[in-house]
Length: 338
Image (tube, rainbow, N blue to C red; front, side, top):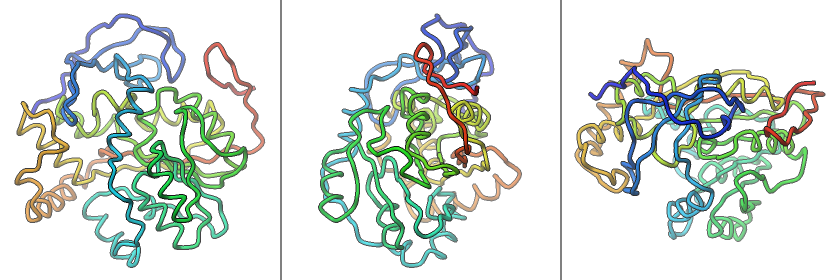
């Protein structure tokens, strides 16, 4: 497989690091990326901040470009609010996810009944509908006006995201907030963490699931690690250390972190390696998608990853610090402990 090159190259200075505010030197991976999944034209470089180690995409997609992409990604098919087998038999779902590696918030969020929950980026509403059916007081936030309208028509409290830096709910509203494969798409992580701090109640719990920049598979697949890089829409690439440092500046304390590799992610990267000229992988199916092959891959992955601590999908759990106020500093967008 195409090994990730260990050598890096100097890149032109562009601006302060958007995660830590550092104006110091940056380094770039020794290759350029293209969009292998959607077929968008262009090339992008991966730039690593030498201060916080967070990797970002350069040039970075604008909010307008991101909104256009997500509008197309949502599609126009009606949403299915029915409860699937995984909702009706949670023990079977958890058992299957142990094998498949899928990261599902229903498997690890243990919120007390009566807690207010937020699914930010609720998408096809599977998680939202499940938590709601179990009696949780859950709301959603979503960019797609079509998704919001269908959700509200079916009795769900879902509000439209009009700005990537704003969360459309009042202050101190939620006890539990989760973002599944969303945070890496946000252009201003500092402003967004400020919003998370604002909407969460004291001692609230936050869950983030993102591609893991320290994953062993990133090193194995290199530029073919398309589930993680997803140029140009995954704007930042975090490890647990970088996320913990960023969150602490905004009043969140790291509680726990773990990672797993979804078989579907591994299969996508394997397909990218086997078909280096293909740039529309999301719409192309091949023999790797057959059920027998998928089952074999699941079993092999679980065996291979037994000694591996850094897998593809990183989950980080935070607690909002109690009794901490953070003055906003307009010049850097950062908040600092007094």
